[in-house]
Length: 250
View 1 (cartoon, rainbow, N blue to C red):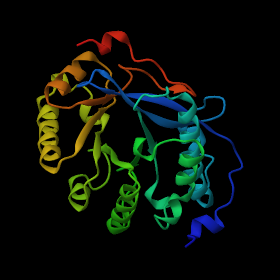
View 2: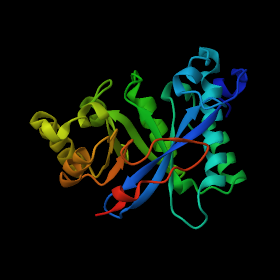
View 3: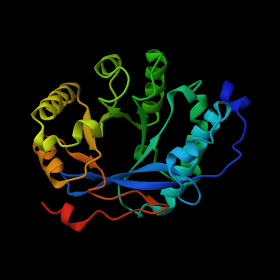
């Protein structure tokens, strides 16, 4: 059945593209996947693009971002390599989970991109007023083999309360908890608690915003396997940036 956004959302009156930032697997010592980050067609930052999105265009923008990310990844990802594509989505832009997935599923088929290689991130910074709706979204996405992730954990709305309502496949620990963790006993204690909770719930952890080797080493020793941040590589516009060889060393 069609949803409200499918039938009423106006088309975008601007163009955009994507940059890609690697996610590094410290256990396997390789790139695990790439996050698609919205950019202007001339490389403008995400805030400049998002400022152009009117409330009426929010649904269409969310849908078009998914298709653009899959299209570019299908061209950029090396053939034969198992890499995850991480796509951000806005829960408030999803009216009816099954209907709102049609464009995503069509894009995956059109560009021969495996659905098992797609991860959808939603951010804690967007308040979840209806946890049941979000649970329905996650349930529907998992039916199709998508991985689900909670972004910016520890810096947005609800925090542990949101995690108690439902459990995503992956949690991205916000950079505010990461920054300077090598010199902060308090941050190390908080992250240790998150590691213990994630282990109990069977959730994979990713530390984002890594800027120094010291931060990486402390978090790796704490049991975190996946990492993202400028220390590994900055986002690259419409290409896959290499991860620095020094960071790939053991």
